[in-house]
Length: 249
Image 1: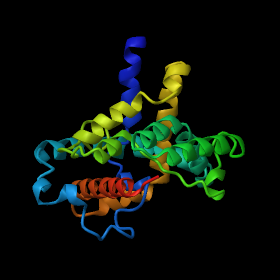
Image 2: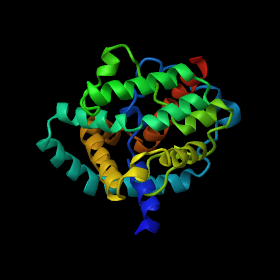
Image 3: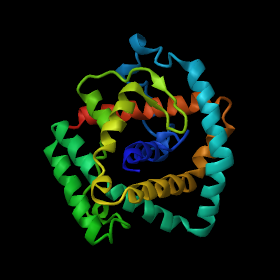
Image 4: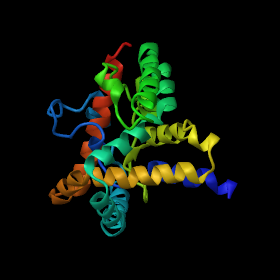
């Protein structure tokens, strides 16, 4: 079982299916979304979806899995647990990502942001009752959520080809490698039995799916769901990268 622990952990760590990353950050059409995608999507990189024929087929498979498996489970979960409680679950799970946030802010040369993430963890883990309540933000400790994909981008690595894999969220070559690296920064996999991080990640997937159901419904109503999900993901990641590059601390 120990030999299977890491592959299962990586699978559940990334299992969000076709969920646009905007559901966790900001909508694709939010303020700032009207600006052109940053320089990485300029003319030299305009053909980032080089294997669209493959991605579209996998996207259809993931969409079917979401429709017939994940969505029913999430809607049932949402009918039992009210939205405020779901947001508390999301806050608590996000609070556990402190190592990833601190490491990536440090690698980006932002010690103040790294220190702020440590302070957020301490405040939310105590006053926020294990992170259920985001007291730190109310106290002015704004989050600076960073991941290895963004860190690699800050150091000049191009995003590479857009990629959709079975039972995994949309990504790119760079962000996929970054997610794999971030997976090793979860303290739970080192200090708890293998089923604890698996259970936490499974809960996170279902909880996020229930909270963001309106995002999925909007995606399903779009004329071209595949392109909508791809463009939302790429634009969000480029906005996040641009913000990381512009932030000095």
